[in-house]
Length: 405
Image (tube, rainbow, N blue to C red; front, side, top):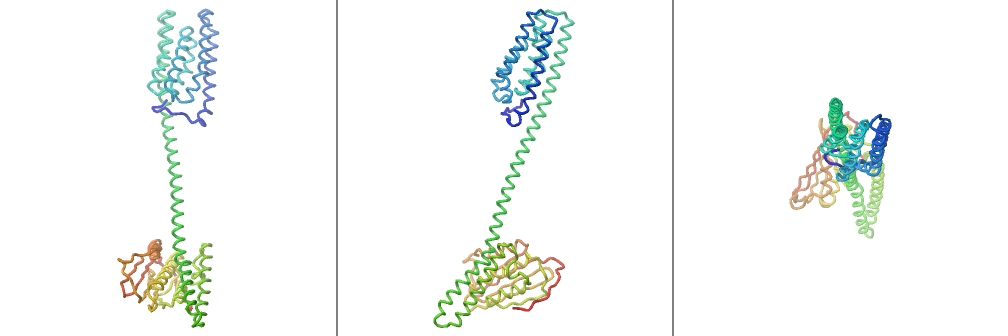
């Protein structure tokens, strides 16, 4: 039926083939009635014609239906079935002209089971052979031969045109069905990749959040434990102060963990402004804070990025700058941007020798998510300066400064 025959999908074709069974049965029954009721030729000839029609029906049930259900996938089996069916039909049509009604049953089968060129050849044989054989056997007058020939020609032209048109429609429908299947598969693949991308982005976000909050807090706790162990026997007062700081840090970590689980803003920003949160954070690290410009209410995403950048920069200063280093934090509000600068006077580092770690990469990624930039300037013995610049939406209303903690 098509240029590349394939096995039909049972779920669709088997259900729809009952229509063809009924159609073929009606045509065969009609041909049988016409053969039995024909006035000529004699009874013996009509009986032979009826026998051929019955054999044709039996051949369809035994072999033809299975061939049609596979859409002609086995072309040898298809040719065998149609050759026998055409021979039986031609015999009946030669004996009794009325039985050529079976043409309407066999022609669709040709287009169903054969590729288009072979289908046209088979239809031509089904249309022409019975008329030619009838004319040779019964020697009718020229008028009858002419009329039957015209009828056969019209039937052939109509069958070929309709069959070809239907095949093209079916082929186009199949192409569209294949395209829909491809689109469906592509949509499922896109959905899968989107889900994987979303999961990866969420993992990266959670990694940054944990690194900038919980991991930093646990690092501080470990450093304080080591300090308390060293001070417990010789400086109880300092040890107690460190224990108090450990308790505050643990509480802060717990608050950050709860905020992460609940999807809320960082604990330092809960109910306060960004300058207040930066001051609290800087106080835990012993850093000085300056705020320049008029503090404005910013979108939560910008404030989270600024606070996390400050946390990461202060944590790096505590780990790498050295105990004698002075650390300062500057927040600068301008009309179109917010700039955070964390500067220390510590040991510094050579960026060519020591590549950036996860924290600085995460800091840059955070800034990029809100169309901001992050820059790190450092040199051995000259300290380190981290500058994060974030774009600020226009017309941000100013908010009153809170009393520094």
